[in-house]
Image (cartoon, rainbow over all chains, first blue to last red; front, side, top):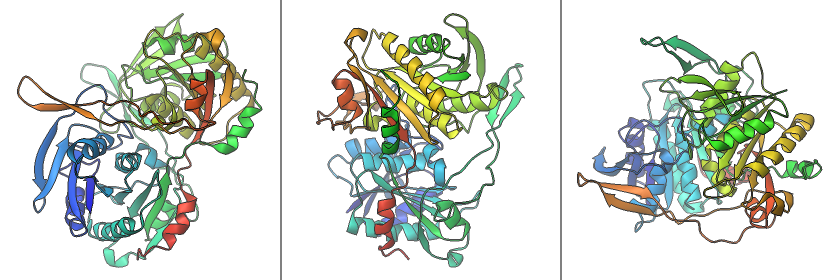
Length: 252
Length: 252
């Protein structure tokens, strides 16, 4: 069995090293990840310029490649170029430094790497560790190894990834695992205006999370309650209910 | 009524100018779009650097802003900064030069601008004109004006956008409108290796579309048959069916 590992924090991030070391006890691992931080990359791919690749080792001698692209590029390139004769059985993206919960998965480079794995027809997992700094990835890595074993044993339905979030508590305080829905996150989308030394305005995206109640069964509630959250995320985007409504509109 | 218009081909693209001119007959229009080509940007947002904005006019004196960000940035910035006291009633993204069909919407900057509109709570439409070059946007613009009127009249359910694709035939040959599902697109994901003048390898994403049969009712089949395709796309990503399966796994 072979696992392709990627992320959006870059090939040199602590989270991917810890993940690769733990997963190397489950299967052969190969790391293909961005050569630098690519957070909030969404599901972008690089069409207008070529990709450069640097081969290296990380951690305890793990085979790794830093790619000058997005997380989705890395998985596409990993599966179709680097591992074209060594097909991976599983793609794992992470461990991200910070949550990827609820509707935020739209913006997540971590989740997009896993989605690209699923697009390539490979079972895929995204893993994020809640927190702001001084991340301890031990519990997340250990859980992901167990989840990887289950996915390799049971498979996963097509066009679906598992999105894992690990709460920001000591490993001994984690209360268990919950299978969850993606909850709703809403932001105060404020922009802060500043003036640069040349007198030109520029704008930072600022503004925090709105404090709305977490839905029962949601990933947001699970991690708040101290559970590891596992959300099955698919990308069957068609809203079939709305199709019937639209057919009654005056469109011709 | 006010319409915020964006795209991923950039504020100077022909498609957005034609769209803005036609929609200005439906409502007040304001264009907020990337200052340059941002195709395949996916749903990326810009967190690590600030945004710059340039005010301008396009076409027949239409108020427009070029923003140094992704399509999703432009809509977020347009709604929350530029139009914070002039709330838009509709977001329209396009007209994209080229299709955004089926599973390709994952990668689409055009669709991501519309999705950001929906995240901001505003009914949203994405519009793409099939073809490769010498685009004629007349039919697409005319249809979008009609669809915009219907959306402004009927509203749209939350967390949903309408994804429109217009076939590459003369306006007189369009056979009508079909409400469709997102079909499946699969690619030969080949990378072409080249060597730069410094002797370093680099890789272009190459490889074409796999010729697989289009599903009945799909957007891919509709445009192939000469119809304008309207797909209702939502982003309720949770796979509830898989939740039950996962609960039986050994995860604790």
